[in-house]
Amino acid sequence: MKVNSTLALTDIIDFILNKVALHTKTPRDTLQADTSLAKVGVDSLIAVLLCGYLEDEYQLEIEPLIMFEYKTADQVANVIFKRVTSE
Image (cartoon, rainbow, N blue to C red; front, side, top):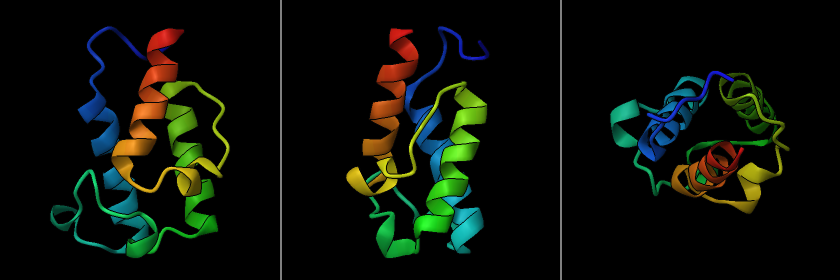
């Protein structure tokens, strides 16, 4: 597994926000951990892409629905962090 003991929650948040900025054309410096993903344009297609990136990065299976169940990068990252650190 690529993930190691130095993984921080902020790493996952940054990873998510960088990908959101890329796909929504939103300037990265305007995105915060508590920014609503839907309000910046994360739709079902982008949610699928984000989950693919997260799966590749953290070796997890993630359903795209997570992007709508949890509304912010911080909330999504918390779920992923818990799953990664519990394995």
